[in-house]
Structure formats: C-alpha cells, structure tokens
Image (cartoon, rainbow over all chains, first blue to last red; front, side, top):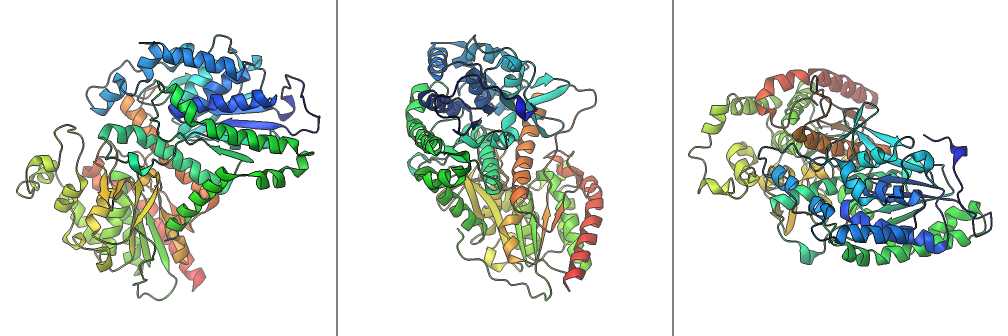
Length: 327
Length: 288
C-alpha cells in the first residue's frame, strides 16, 4: 500500500485548487470492460486527471494504460487496432469460440496449454505502458486474488505487467500468476468493483461497473450448457457487487449497461463502444456537477442531488431485489 | 413467484428460529448434523431457507422427516456406487436421454434425477410442508434472486441445484433458473425478518493446496475460483447484515461429488454440530 501522502500530482489542475480530487475504480467484466475506454475519455475531455486509479481484471489493464500517462484516444486506437486484426492472436485468444473454453467444457482431457496472461498483455497493452508501478504518472492499485489464502491482494508496487496479468488471470483461460510466492488469479473473484480499496484516497470516488446487467426478455432463449457455464462466473461477480453496494456506495456509480455482450466478445469492439455511449454521458454530467461545486465539503449533498436517472434505476433494482428477499 | 409469505405453520411456542442452509453439493450433507441439533433440543425452526444442497436437506426436514431419517435415506442411497446406479434401473421413464443429453454427456436433467432419488414426502407441493420452506434459485437472464415457495417442490429443488456445467437450467414460469448459490449461497437474509433467532450454515468449499503442488491444475483452479466467488458474495453480505448464529462446518476440503463419503463428512461436521447446539441453547436461554 502506498502511503497516502505520496500520491503523485502529474499535471497542473486546470480548475481552481479547491477543486475536489477524484479516485477512479474500474471494474472487471471481460469484453464489457472495453467500455472503460469511454470513461477515460470523459476524464480527458474534462481535463481532469484522477488522483489515483484502482482496477480489477480488464479494469486493471486499461487502468494501467491510463495511469502510464497515455491518452484515452491513444488507448482506444491501440485497442481497436489489436482487436480488429484479422486472424490476430488476440482475437483468437479471446474469441468466445476459442478452443480452451470449449475443451474445458467438454471435460475432455484438459489441455496443458492454457495461456499465459502475460502473453496477452504484451499484445493488448500499448508499448508505452510503464514497466513498474514506480514509473506511473498516476498511482495505481491493481486487485488480484490470492488463490490459496482466499483473499484479496492489492498490488501497488514492483513489476506492473505481472500485476495486471494476475488481475486478469481468469481460470480455465489463463494460467495463474505466481508473484512473491503467492498464486494469484483474477481479482474479480473477490472484488469485481474495487472502489473500496480507494477509501480515503480522494474527495470523490467514482466506480465504473461493467459486471453485466439483465438481458432483455427478447434475448432470453434457453442457454446452452456452454453459455450457462461461461456466463455463470459473471452472475457471481454481479452478485458480489450487489451485496457490496448494500454495505457501502461510491460517490458516483456508473452501471455500464452493455448487457447484450458476452464476456468474451472482444471482437465486438464497436458495438460495445456504441452501447456504452449513454454511460459515458452520465459520467460526464455527474463529474461536471461535482467539479463545479465550490468546495469538497459540499460534495456529498451535491453528488447525491445531482444523480440523474442511472442511480435511480439502480436503486429501483435494489429495491426490487430487497422486496424479493424479504418475502 | 413470491409476494405473499407462507403462513407460520409452526406450532412451537417460544422464540421463532429461522434456519438457512447453504449450497455446497456433497459438503451439504453436513446440514444433516445441524438438523440433528434441532431434534436433540426438541425444537423446530419456524421457517427454513435452502440453497442448492441446502434446499434438499431443508425440504426433507420441512416435510417432517427427522434428521435420523434423512441421514438413513442418504446413507442407503450412497452406501455403494453400484447400489446407487442400480436404483436407476427400472425407474427411468422414457429413454436414458431424458436424464442425459447426448450432445453434452456431462449435463444432467435435475428434475428427472430428483424425481427418481428424492423421498416420497417431497413429491408434493410447498403448501403441504409442515414447516414453511423456501428454496433459492438464480434467474439466469435477470441476474437476480428468485425465492421459490409455492407449487411442486421437486422442480423448485431441481432449479436451486442446477449448477451450470453439471445440470441443465430449469425453466419455471418462463424464467430460466440456475443454482441459487450464484446469487445467494447462504440465504439467511431471506428469512431473517421472520424470526427471533437466525441460524446460517455455510458449507461452501475452500480451495485446497495439494501437497507439493505450487500452482493449481485447471480443474482445481476453476473449482476453487467458483468457491472463492461464493465466499465473496457471503463476505460482502455479512458486511451489511449478519445472522445471530453463523456456522461453518469444517468440510471445506471435500469435493462437490464426495457423496459417497457421507460418514466422513458427518464426522467432520461434529465440531460444528456441538458449536451450534451450544450457541442455540445460549440464545434460547437468553430469550426465555
């Protein structure tokens, strides 16, 4: 853990110094996490740099790129290029129809050639991404799971690539990452939306949730055993987020509604970007409102009253859930 | 599927006890030891909630079977592997493909399976149960909890136990349902407000380090990851709401399919059983 006073302030703020600081949490959720790029665009468009970023899984990947000082535009261009390469390695690796998952499902002799997540990262991360946490322009906390200790590990120093690889190491697709003697896996197993690890780090905490959403009735066909299995870990992560939000909430919560996308549908980059456009507008509106408030002290009230439709929608969802729970 | 709570049919006077039995496949056999506590203390829960394996044990108890009867039933079923398979002969209506689909041989149809295996007392409706009982399932597409508390019992239990990758999802009232553990592995919060004392039993497994192994194999990693996800839901839930008594029998090391180790599992649950008995007695004394 980085001592609180050590936070870097890489660029001069463009608004008055009384402007509140923002901590940004980017959640895990596979291909839906491509939407994080749009959220980072909001920060660029507002000329606002997060004081600190936390990321889980795909959120750690884009968090690392942005914390390295790359612009959202550059990250978007790079990601689009990588994902659109015909017969590209990444596409092959991440395609929903890729071999490892299929073979796993059939419980046929399970292959030894699970992918090393580092290999994927070499492909996905722009070359300018920092090698070490110490070289980042914005402090970063990467969330991973210690498999045998069954607990969350927050990585914020040392080698960056292995940390992000660990955070993304979804079992059945990737090999676990061994770091400092610990066997590490996807951070989404313990914390798919890591806003709580940013507690006290900044005036305002923003959480981007890409853990999924309900499917519209039109799309509800009986799932194949394959899609049931692939989707099931997403349902679990969604359940973790739901329980977590009952005990604590970030100041700004954005539920990216890109529900119709399969967790492994990385090739549908453009569609995810389009679907997440609304969430981008929501984030921008809410951040603008928070930033125009004069002092940080006024924030809680301001951010609450400013909350337009999305939090309301979430609340109604929770209420519905609570009603069911209470019989 | 649930707007109205089922009426309290329990006639027991004294504090009302809610019992929540969690999911954990074979590890859930430990629930039987917890039910023995109630029989030994001569008390009945006023409501039971069950997820997955917890729903089977809970439904049996709610139907009026004693813990000893439930134990005997499971023991005879899992006495030997050949005996277990032999009982399928003659019971299966239609072809074998009603139970296993040809396309995905690993996937079982729970409704068919349960109709063959579960005791006669459960071939009935929720309304006939002696103790109010709810089973927890997950709506696959809505990604939300469904509390099943009416209609035929067996399809509800089949849905609550429809573990993806093992069993086919169950369609009830137009909803595609899977194992309740995916939204609520230890469903105490569903029944807390209907009792004075809430008891939760968590039999989620734990990833086990094999001696000498430095990195888990694929099956181990996938199984362990799912268990971690279940634990994470419960841990987060405990931050906002906690039961009066939370019991975690030491059965985390048994695998999901260790049904034939029923004796061992119940032995391993002995410590938790004593613990539950002590805590429950204390709570009852404190209240009365």
